[in-house]
Length: 198
Image (cartoon, rainbow, N blue to C red; front, side):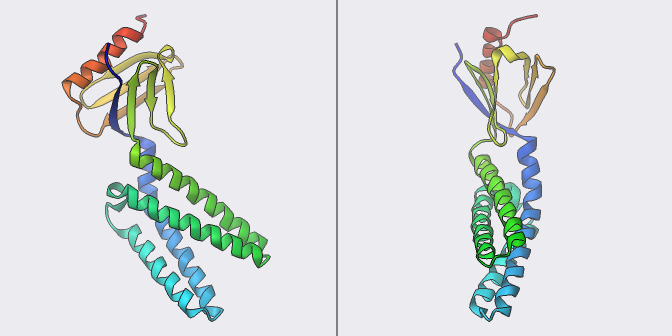
């Protein structure tokens, strides 16, 4: 019997996250600069200067071509910094009894944390795994598990895989690079063993 196999794919949800990443960096940079303006008015010039530098740095990331595609680990690191900053600003706004600002910043913190969680997951997982229990597809916020009983048909080719379920859902993914012939054979062995012919 074939051994379990994981193949790297190009997942649409992961691709969409990479596309919006520059926009999130840009927004975070603007918030840093807005916080710097506030600190400057409060005569905290050193803090304001640091926030301006960080804000401009984060905004610059939004305009670096291909950064989101090639630097998932760095993206996740910046996203964690953004979560900490937005969380800190939310706490400060709450201490200043500015509930509306605190609520907006808390929502931004939650949103950036979710994106951080997704980007962290994207670093290690963007794959389809074929194993004895079924097929596991990398997904947000958690992986999608399809048991063999749920799968009607599975078409594997060197450059793509298509999974048809009994609920008439189709999951189609391109591989990041063409898979080897023996990997394709492993997938076909699983299909022959577990899929019931109709």
